[in-house]
Image (cartoon, rainbow, N blue to C red; front, side):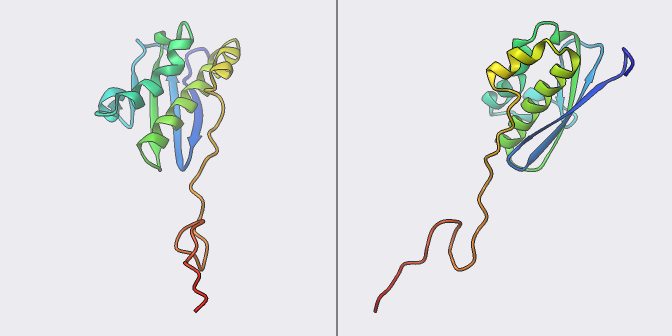
Length: 133
């Protein structure tokens, strides 16, 4: 890979998938689905903070731009997937970042998903009321 090539990484959470491109030069801007991160997660500042969290741990990360494409799931899942993708990309940028990001839990894929609905039941685990008579 050349010095001026964009670095790509994928992050996932629940049913959301995020793909990130890290551009070699920039001023630390994060774009999610062609909108600034604060605009995409408008009204939910904690989600935008969640996406930016890996950048605050790694020094030198503000000299690059991050272009994130997120599909599937809801807002929370998308924010988690974007955070996971950015963290994985920062490890690709410099392997020294891995220890810090892993300790913060940003490299762990959150495996929790909605359980499927079972046949003969109203929901995944709820049962219909038993009636003896």
